[in-house]
Length: 67
Image (cartoon, rainbow, N blue to C red; front, side):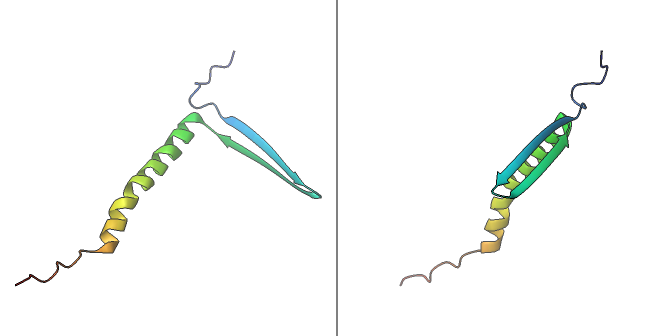
């Protein structure tokens, strides 16, 4: 029986893409904790975009008063 904790056990995914004579193979290994870390980083990036865009727009000048 494997005594390795499930959150640090590496998971493997493989993919093969064939288009005519072109063949591309890919293999990815990651742990569930690594995927959680990547998800946290993506969430932080997505949450930081609106304040950056808002700051880049700057403040809009108020129209001159009527009168």
